Image 1 (cartoon, rainbow, N blue to C red):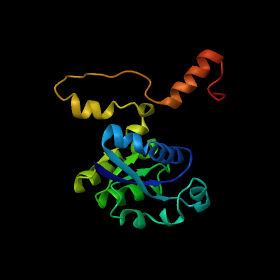
Image 2: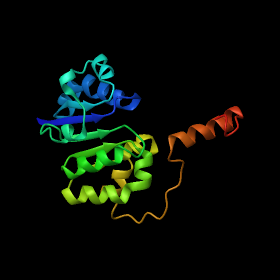
Image 3: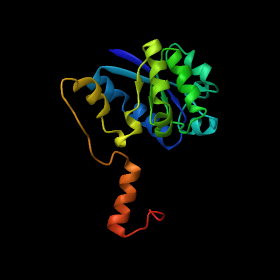
Length: 179
């Protein structure tokens, strides 16, 4: 069985949900995927929030250096959002050779080439599907499995927020501002 250690940066709505899924489904992942996934640490400013979720105080990191120096951490999940400090944290994690998973749309829209270059420098994984298409697993499919195809275009609404706004406008007659 493969052991995988995870660190989560931020325990807001998304980070808290990631934590709950990983801990609640630990036995399921072992049984179905042959993976022993453990949340090794979280980085959260509000320590009491982490403790209220059942996280031991000793597993609440106060800095990115504490996260990346943890030899049990294989994957860093960045769910803070925005540009800084997220960008700096992601770059530090990639430079340390940790795989990074992020749902940060803004960060990827503005800095994808720089982040990709950092990942290639250390051969670290950089997973960002959660940042677009509502997490539909299409990006890796296109990159890793469709090389022999000659795809000339892809059309559709690939942003859940945009889809929500357009649906409210079409179905409810809402204005753009209201939606």
